[in-house]
Structures are given as C-alpha cells and as structure tokens.
Picture 1 (cartoon, rainbow, N blue to C red):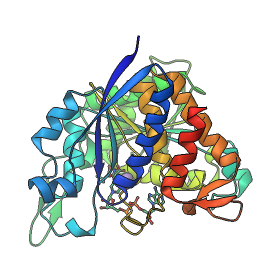
Picture 2 (cartoon, helix red, strand yellow):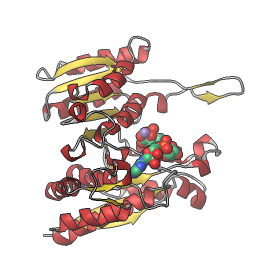
Picture 3 (tube, rainbow, N blue to C red):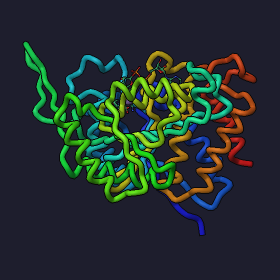
Picture 4 (spheres, protein in one colour):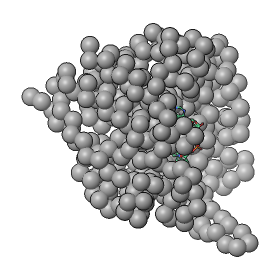
Length: 356
Ligand code: NAD
Ligand code: IPM
Ligand code: MN
C-alpha cells in the first residue's frame, strides 16, 4: 500500500527558495519510483512572511506545521530586514517556530566525504574520515533567557538552563553515541559561567546511566581550536544553543563548505529539517548556491521523521556518486571539478541518480 506523508515546506528568504526547489525535485524523483507519496503544503516564515503578513511567523504557519508529518525549511533573513524591531526580525520567526514545535535537539552531522578531502581549507590528512555529530540544545540558553533588554546605555541577555533541559538533551547525545563510537564530549565554559558549571554537573549525572559511553568535557574556546587541530578526536559533541551554533559553522569547513551540512531538529513531536547555513544574501538570486545541505536535510527527514530509510540511503548514495564523478558547485572549489554546476544542475544530477 502507498504510504502518504504530509510535508510542510517553508522556503524562506535569500537562497531559501532556490535550495528548497532542488530538494523537492529530488524528493519527487524518489517518490515517483517508490511506494510512498509526498504531499507538500507551503507556508511563510521570515522576511517573506513579514512582507506579506506583517509578522515573521504567521499563525497559519504554526497551524500548518502542526498538522504535518515533518517540516522542510530553507533559510530566512537578509539585509532588507536588518533594521526592523527584534520581535519582527525574520530570525525571531525561526526561533519562535523552534520553541513552538518543541524541537530542543538539533543534530548537525559534520561528515567529510572522501571525494572532498581537497575541498577543505585544512590539510587532507587532518580531515579525511571526519565524522562528528554535533548535538546542539536548541530551545534554551541565552537565545531564550530572561531577563533581556536593550536600553539606551546598556543591554543584556541571560543564559539560563534548567535541570530538565540539560537532562533531556544529554540523553539525546548519549543515545546517539551508543549507536556510534560511544564517546561524548560535552562543551561548556564551566571555568567562568555558573550556567556551564551546572550544565557539566548535570551531564555527569546523566552519564551514569550510560556506563559504556566515555564522557569528556572541554571548554568551548579549546573546542574551537581542537576542531581545527585534530577533528578526528570527536565523535559526539554535546553543547548548548549558542556554542553549538558557532561550533557547527566551524565544523562545516572541515567538510569543505557550509553548503553541505544538514540538520534535524527533533523533540516533542513534528521535526524540522534544515541546512545549517543561512540565506546567503551575497549569492541569492544567482542560482549558484549549493543545494546539497538541503537535499541532505531531506534525507534526514525521510530517515528520522518518515521512516523511509531506503529513500534516505538513495539520497546519500546519490550525493556520494555525484561528488565522486567530480560534480561541484562553486563553493566546493573548482580545481578538481568535472564541471562547476549551478544550483539547479546539481539538483538535476542528484534527482537523476536517485531515480535509477
Ligand atoms: P550564511 O550562512 O547565510 O552565509 C555565510 C557565507 O556562506 C556566505 O558567504 C554565503 O554565500 C555562504 N553560503 C551559505 N550557504 C551556502 C550555500 N548553500 N552554497 C554556497 N555558499 C553558501 O550566513 P550570514 O551571511 O551570516 O547570514 C545571512 C542571513 O542568514 C542573516 O540574516 C542570518 O541571520 C541568516 N541566517 C539564517 C539561518 C537559518 O535560516 N537557519 C542560519 C544562519 C543565518
Ligand atoms: C542557525 C542560525 C539561527 C541560529 C539564527 C538565524 C536564528 O544561525 O540555524 O544556525 O542562531 O540558531
Ligand atoms: Mn547558525
């Protein structure tokens, strides 16, 4: 019997529509040849929503997302909206959606494809074989802490973590580690911040339930350095909202481009699948963005949200095949490229390979 999946699609701003179109192209090519059917409903968020509906996260989007089986999202933001009040900014829409959906666990895999060891700015022997899972807490920490205020002569934000918040994200990291190499490195700033000391003590408590997993701790400044020095020392990195945001962008350059890194945000119910990068205003509208991070996010969606493991594997294999044949978008460096592809040409290649 044909399985039906309902996907809420949020294209967003900048390169968002370009990369989502390619992910849908690939999903359509898959579903045409497999025993499932995908139904898409498009919703507004970010700058596009502000322009059309006056708010960055319309109620209609929240309701639509809740009725879906998964959300596929591109990116939001851009200079056009930099001057608007904080609560109306495109980014506020995304943060509100994550909170509303309860997607507290953001999984950001940083994998280096053998074919791309020369695309990284680091030496090939440093990056070859890197396979890191960053587990970023997504609905707490300084992003959401209160009090927060912008005054004429000072401004402040507050970094808060509750016990329950740390416990639940730590469990996610340990469970993932159990399926991988059984090593968790918890990254904090416990030498300076009370909130990090609390984070560390709580993670140590949770670790008692996972005797097979080796837990280490690292200060975030050192972690940033170690990611560049010897990235292969990491298996699972467990960290808070802001540290995870920064470290995952850094980790993306191990793989060769931020245009490669997907993410899955999971938690209480429906999950959100999105590339880790932003709306790339500097290249938006030129048709040159790398769609692979979004296509990989669609693969994570098939695997984690829709139970379509075989289809997810087909996407992963198609990406490897395209890279091994020398297909590259411009961000990956053109020196070993068979030809430099546009965003839609890369989508065409992946769609062709998944159809076979
Ligand atoms: P960015 O990730 O949008 O871009 C950083 C650099 O990486 C740019 O040079 C860009 O061209 C390049 N890049 C990003 N994605 C690429 C891709 N798929 N292919 C090729 N190159 C790519 O970060 P930024 O410039 O700091 O932010 C731009 C806007 O995006 C801001 O408004 C920011 O708030 C927003 N943002 C949104 C998200 C999101 O929607 N999840 C994430 C990060 C930033
Ligand atoms: C990301 C982005 C967002 C974040 C912004 C746009 C709110 O940088 O998804 O990594 O900081 O979480
Ligand atoms: Mn980010």
